[in-house]
Length: 302
Image 1 (cartoon, one colour):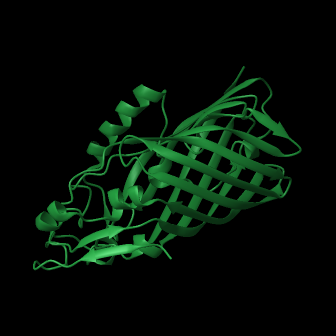
Image 2 (image 1 turned 180 degrees about the vertical axis):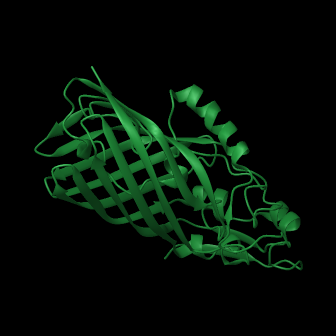
């Protein structure tokens, strides 16, 4: 059982009144996120939404057909509807670039979905290697419910992955440590079934889970004394635990050998110490979140 410490305060435990409409799609503030986007694209040769709105499938480039040459680069526009932040009950629509650069499938990859990594060991369907992912900064203006909470800096998470592939199934686990930002430890796992409905149409999907340590949970779901005084939330010091469970799915349509379209969706539910956070239980929070989006891409190969 994960440990939790809750310290009540005299102030109201509810968040301050911030005018908003539940379940409305909010488009203001896109420019703020896009500025962060551009800075990161310049720093890491262009990775889009990534961990902030984790795309729900472990496959995608595979469904686009066997790469005819060593290098492939998929690029195109996309759009996603997602919560303002993890634990928010409010949604917004964001444009996302769909970028995926690979050498020999996944010997080396720089991908919106899969992060930055390389396969160092492989055999009989197993693959092992290092992985880098990123998590956008969270600021107290990022939607109702965060006023007075301060910010969590942009985080690069480094670690390793292990993956096992069958023709009809893919399993993957990752362990990552935040290099700055939250400095927390994250364990993610997913299991995807894979189905070819036609020569050019593919479906995948399955369950996901995420476990995080107390450092990560304090950064994103905890409320310290100063935050409590500024926000009105009760103090909250979560321990480590199962952060979330969910389901993800995607569909890939290979229109031509170069042109592909993808639609994806995911449901995620915060659990354990994350779900008990005042940020989540307050009037502007929700343990359930949904992500829906789509993208098109053009493949270059050489």
